[in-house]
Image 1 (cartoon, rainbow, N blue to C red):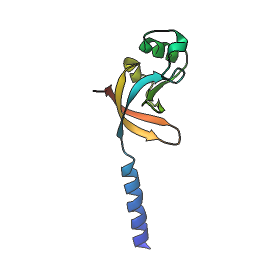
Image 2: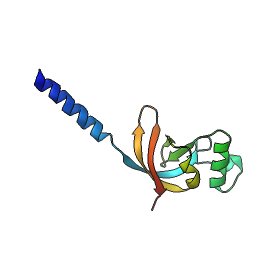
Image 3: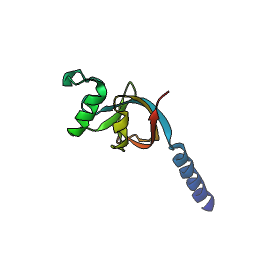
Image 4: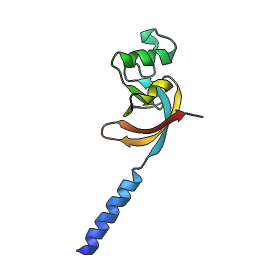
Length: 106
């Protein structure tokens, strides 16, 4: 009985360790326009992103294929429309990227 409890604890620990922070690279955009800001007729893209967020949209990271909602909705403002690297955890079920750190991508 004690061995199975220990094995269960060890397996649980390993699963949690595997879901640690990782890096995501993409463009900071908004949930309404995504990658196509032409419909809003606001240029440059960074200005469109900022205006859409002020109007109720949310900052997202678009990696070229998929957009991820960002847990931090303040810091991305300075990176609107720019390619960034985010370190954080992705919650698959909700599609939310918990932001630990944001910086410009190289």
